[in-house]
Image (cartoon, rainbow, N blue to C red; front, side, top):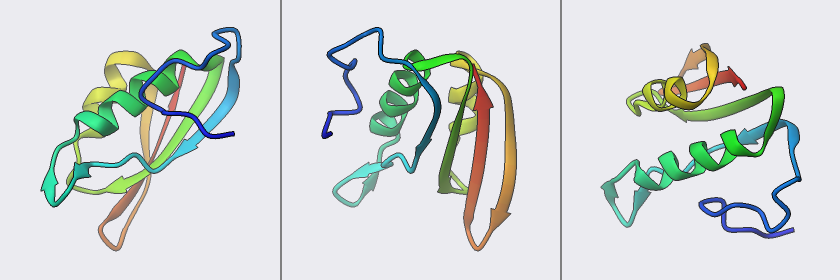
Length: 90
């Protein structure tokens, strides 16, 4: 189903074991991580306890810092060809 990932799900009891994402980091051409940041915070609220968030992002984006404020065990799984894969646990 389609849903605006910057807003809570209609059913707040809907929680997930794993969320996988590639959050946006711009609107237009200018880099602006606020949209991606909103995706990360919403994803964290919809994970079950010990649920995992995995994401792919450009290496220059500071998503680790954001993830560390709302999740734990933030790890860089892979860095390759200008991209990174991060994983964090609730």
